[in-house]
Length: 88
Image 1 (tube, one colour):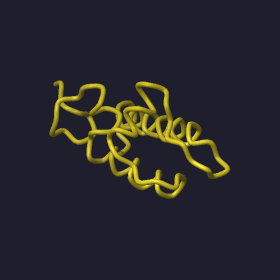
Image 2: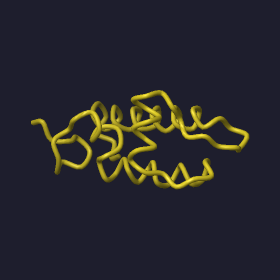
Image 3: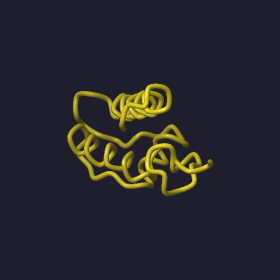
């Protein structure tokens, strides 16, 4: 099936896999305000990932490291669901 393995409601293309899936969007929406001093939206996520232009921020942890950590967490959760049937 070409449906998202996490939400099972939408076809899984690249954008859905990374941030359009509602469960993954929740991760972005929770983590970014906690670690970046800005509100996250689809354009900021796309720019950070597809153009390698992370949002500018003045906090001590670089914003590209935050984006990288979120992507790593999403991948780990995806593969834990896929291989080990652990809920997302």
